[in-house]
Length: 369
View (cartoon, rainbow, N blue to C red):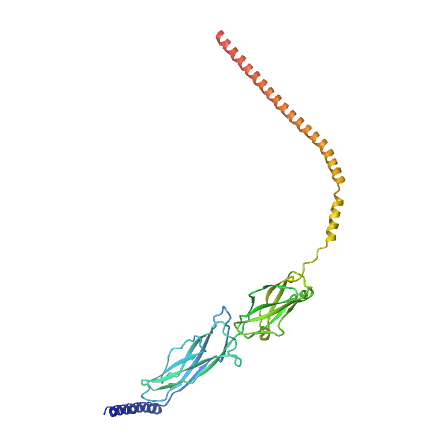
């Protein structure tokens, strides 16, 4: 009994659902679907996503809607649904049509992220803005989907290269090959092709240092990096010193697109050392002996004695004369000071005597009076 009741209930539910769906389809068929057209004014737009730009685009358009006549339909509600990749996209407000309104404008803002690749993939150069949506009558639940309108978004290319190296200074024995790992970074949004050149290649070759670059240009994906191995070969004749390897990187892609990218320069340093089993340069003992002989010849005892005699003869008289002059000058200076003191003392005594005589005369004159 229980199973029979459940089966009957399920059958009634499916029957009612089918009747509702059939009734909705009959209602659309009875009323008719609206004729709706979405038109985007800009078929395509270009945007710059280079660092420092906002990458914002504004699309405008028009929605035309023709409603079938029915006394049960008062309004047609249209909801637009725009989409462009997974980027931020604004949704326009709901559009409401009626018997007197058949056209309404809309505006959509798309923000393309900074650094977006110039090409979406290898077969397509542009991205798409798609505008679709839904419609429904009011009052009621009758509705449907809108046809999709599209526009192209072209992302402008920009270029930028950076060179680096984790170990730009390498020491090696002469006659060996040293390998540098140069890091080439593509900071642009295009599939970059990089050409490397050695600025001082001729100078290095003349000094028995050979720099070996890759035979072809180096491809680097947008906003990515690539490691380039650079071999530097020396010979047994290479001098023991440091060698600067000056590298310049050029953007081939920028040339192909008619753009410009600043060439990037980087310097590697190779320190060439003596081989571990290479002997030190020989020392010539004969040369040292010859040098000693030259020193001995130049510094004989006779010369030393003669020089000493000359120095003694010259300095004895001069020193005596100088001492006498200094002593005489000191004596004259002392005598002058003594004489000056005596003169001052005599003058003071005379002035005191005159003053005393004057005072005595005044005293006598007063006594007489």
